[in-house]
Amino acid sequence: MKDCKYRDLRRASIRFYERSIKLLFKFLKDDYNIIFAENVKEEHIRNYMKITKERGNHSYVSNENMVITRIS
Image (tube, rainbow, N blue to C red):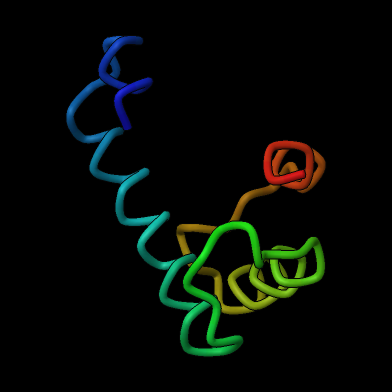
């Protein structure tokens, strides 16, 4: 989140990103019992994106290549 502050993003944008990250962490813990980032695999992110897209959740990321690249 420090990057967001350095880029001078609006407070509302930062809160949105924080909520989105919390939703992802909750999904990883609840569905896969993952609490450490190094245990996250591409399939976990793809499943999260699929579920949030199906639900119409605001945390859906439309560019999956960006997400996969950043966690690899």
